Image (cartoon, rainbow, N blue to C red; front, side, top):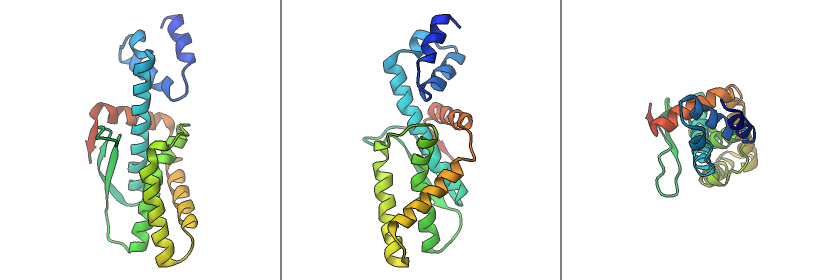
Length: 180
């Protein structure tokens, strides 16, 4: 690798650097890989991919089956995961599992050091509705349920390394959509 390319790589943030290195390893030219506009688009796709993988990983850990994972943009939606419970359970348990799954995307973003979660607004809105329903029907506070769900998602994702997440994200980006 040329010294100027190495120097430019060192200036990239911790999210963009692995993306650029993966592209260079595939034989793409440094000028293409380090083009700021292209790199910004790849970075946005990587954040979306890792966000959706977070949902899928937390789904599996909570006994749900992620049937489809997609990073194909549709309108304002950058990606989605469709998961179904793998077993019958009480409304209480399924709602708590679903709540943790809603936090999976944000927990994955946080793990990779991405702290701008504006794209996760629908996840948070849905999570708040579920938590309020749990509090109303079963007691406790919505904040308590939200906190437990966030801890569930964070501890689940802490079992996985960043290299693994980036590798899985790259696979998802290449496929666009994965059906389980």
